[in-house]
Length: 285
Ligand code: PAF
Image (tube, rainbow, N blue to C red; front, side, top):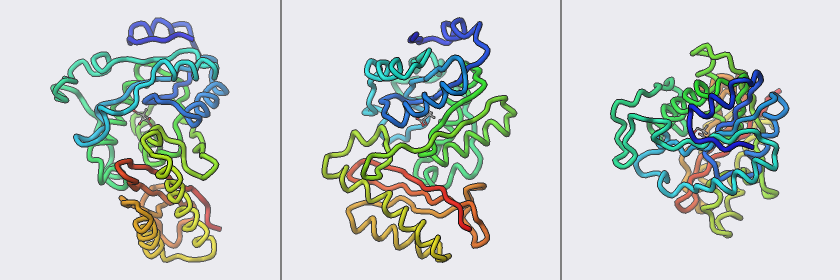
C-alpha cells in the first residue's frame, strides 16, 4: 500500500490505472470506513482512500482542532483491508489559497450547495455542506475515480454528493455503504471516541428513538410532526439536547407527506459536547 501526500505523486501513481474507486474519509477510521473500503474493492482494481480533515466543513465553534488525527493506525487498518493507496494531503496541498493559521479562506473558491443543504444538519452547521461539496469535488478532480463510496450514516451528505455528481455531470458512480452499528444499535462514528462509557451506553437511545418512529409509521401513524416532537422530548428527557428529528422523503429530502412511501427519519442530537447523527431509511407500504 502506498501512502501519498501530494497531488502530483498521486496523479503519477494513478497514471496507468483504468479502474479506480475512491473512499473519501477524514480518518480516525472504524469498522464503518473499512466496510466502505471493502465495497470499493469489489468495484475497482485500485482503491484510493483519502484521509483529510477538511477545515472548510467545520464551523468556528466546532471540533476542527480536536478532531482525532490517527494516520498511522488508520494506515494499518487500510493495509489489512487491501487498500492500494492512501492519499493524505495537508491543508496547504488541498487549499493553496487558505490560511490555516488564521482560518482565512483568502481567494479559495467554494461550491455553493443547493438550498436543501441549509436544512437538517445544515441549519445548525452553516456552510458545512459547501465545505463538503468543495472538498469532494476536489478529490474527484484529483483522483478521477470511476466509482466513489460514501456511508449512508451521513444521509444528507450522500444526497448532496449525488446532486453534485448529477448537476456537474461527473462520470462517477456513487455507491452507498450501509451504516455499521455497535451491538447496542449505536451507529459507528469517529466522534464516538469523545463519549464516556456512560454516555456511550446512553447514546444507543438515539437509534432506539428512530426505530420507534419507524414502527409507529408502519402501524399507520401519519402524524409525522407529532412523532418528531414526542421523540425529541423523549431524547431531551434522557439527557440529550436534540438538534432535529425529521421524517423526510428519501427521494427529495423534503418533509414527508402522507403520500410518500420512500421515507427516511433523520436525527442529530448532542450528548454532552458530542453531536451525533443517525437515520433509518424505510419504505411504507
Ligand atoms: O464523511 C466524511 O468523512 C467527510 O464529510 C468527507 C466526505 C470525507 C468530506 O470531508
